[in-house]
Amino acid sequence: MLLGILVVLCFIPSADVTENKILVAQHPLLIVANRNATLDCNYTYNGTGKEFRASLHKGTDSAVEVCFISWNTTKTSTSSNQEFNCTGDHKKNKVIFNLQNMSASQTDIYFCKIEAMYPPPYVCNEKSNGTVIHVKETPIQTQEPQSAIPLWIMVAMTGVLAFYSVLITAVFINYWQKSKRNMYHQTDYMNMTPRHPPHQKNKGYPSYAPTRDYTAYRSWQP
Image: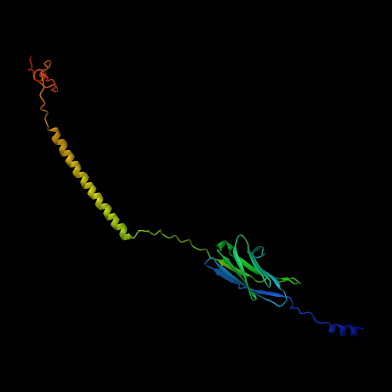
């Protein structure tokens, strides 16, 4: 009886342990100096799946899904987390994730996940070793504003303004000196209009002649 059981077991085809298995390989380290990173997820799959999904996860526990891409024989779609600027691209046995405008705070370990969605059975890869993406801090460079006017034009304009300033100053000083001389001559002019004695009107003196004050000529008496 035991011999019959052993014979039957020998004729049972053995299961192929490599069937419907996905293996993923990633580079261990990626240095980002220009805020843009390209992460390659190389994979092998020996199944007959027709619909797939690939996603990129951040953190040691893969808690944050950065972005994903899904495709089948006719259609491809991709989506990104709001905190990242990420797109996916599928090629033969490779998924490429492009991350743009990364910041130093996004330095972490990232894992690729490949899933065979359809037809059944569902298959996904075991967790890979991941890729450490190190984003270097980009120093902020301040550029001095460049003057839109050439230097020689500015020098010429400065010279012209200086010339006109000196000219205007000279004209003002000349005018001031002339005005001062005119005022000096006017103070030396004596009023020769005839004056008439007080209380004596209409005796040959013009009506506009002012009254002469004789008290100024009265001799002093003790």
